[in-house]
Image (cartoon, rainbow, N blue to C red; front, side, top):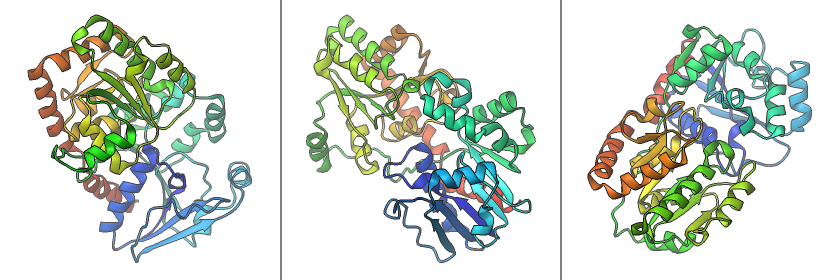
Amino acid sequence: MNIGIDIRCLMPKHYSGVAEYTSNLLDNIFKIGHKNQFKLFYNSKQDVTKNLPPFNFSNIKIFGFNYSNKLFNFCLKLFHFPKIDHLLLKTDVFFLPNLNFIALSNDCQKIITVHDLSFELFPHFFSAKRRLWHKIINPRKLISGCDKIIAVSANTKNDLVNFYQIPANKIKIIYSGLNQNLYRILEQNEPKFKLIKEKYNLPESFILFLGTLEPRKNISGIIEAFNLLKARHHDFDNLHLVIAGEKGWNYKQIFSLAQNSPFTDQIHYIDFVKSQDKIYIYNLAQLFLFPSFYEGFGFPALEAQACGLPVIAALNSSFPEILNDSAFLIEPDYINEISNAIYLVLSDQNLKKDLITKGLENVKRFSWQTCAEQTLKYISNS
């Protein structure tokens, strides 16, 4: 079977959660899909080849085009031209790992992965530019027009059924995976720990948030909860807060809140962290905080669990499904509840150990190999 795959999300230098999903999924699909021919598509006016993963498999061909993206997307949207399957010299099925502009011929099957509908449910968490992009691309029409749909969680499937009225039998739930060879508990005498501490100027004792700095992640709530904890409990005088991740939309509000905190000297920001460094930062932290207002899956929480961290997350969206009872789930709107959860987890060693044990067991459910096997089977049965 000739399978076309959209890899435009792999063009940026820094990978988002969708790019991590696509990279890991494809790497594992290519390892088992020997009977198929894979044709990878991207378009960029700039040279992005250095950012693309080195997919070194004999049955893969990369089709890179350098049209103006604005003009190319305009033609795809308005004229439904060019047909991307024709650019790839015939494909039986085309797989989109995320929303994007697309035009395909009628005899080419179309399959898409939907990670979440946060842009529909919480538009106020997105910039005007991003809201306009979603309006132009028309996700409802794009997703509804696909022959098959992959949802990364039951929560996302439910949103598709309830919000877009898509038939449930058209949607298959396939959980994303976790690279457990990368994210794991490290020996404390690992020499690189000292280098990472120095590189990122990390404090001795800290709680951690890691993700894109944007309103949906509720980082403001984390800072306010940290302030409340420090004001109430002087036995945590030496505890710091580390916020790690690339700057997203409206990040300045987060910085302003941190700078105006009475404990600003104990709030640290580090920018985008590469995967090979993340594992050390997770292992150095005392606790991982992820009280996001909405997540379709939530990779960072699972990464933290795999590294032996207790996790506090939100009681919403996919968290109850993905984390079950392996994390301390709280209502993200209530600062007092977040603060109390931090105090309980850090002061009750039995609770902390229980969350760590359950977390390590929980992550065993998520494998890129399993995700790849299920996805390839779903695609191949088109």
